[in-house]
Length: 188
Image (cartoon, rainbow, N blue to C red):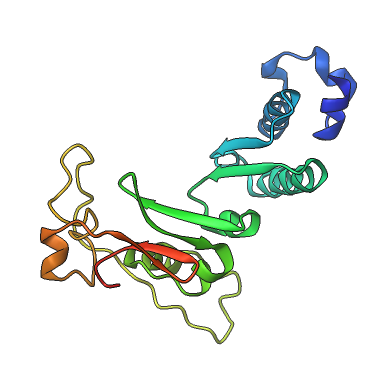
């Protein structure tokens, strides 16, 4: 137990504390130590940093990266924070209404998104240096988010897609492979 605490940046005396005596970041570290106790090959990280302060988020992501290298771990990192996903992921899978709309190597997906939903998501990431010469075009989605229990006919994104065609409202698109990427869209 002391070794696990040390691995996640806690001290042996933390073993005697009650949960309410830990900060949010320390609680995340305890959660990571608990996951490591089973000596897994894969860890599912479901929104592991969403409730943390930005500086603590960076510490937790750096800890996860360090442990990944040291222990040869694979993470399934589920999150809405696209900047963090890019930082920690090699492969990215984008979902809309429970279905995969695009997947591929992180670097390619971020540089050239194929699906209109991925394009909209990536356009919403704040630019860290607003005075730089690069001007990002923001894709603003219109329309209502569909009811997940009563999805529209055709593509579930068609009611909000700025590029939707007639077929998008009538038929569900198939997932196709485009190089080392996949996309579920009638545009391809």
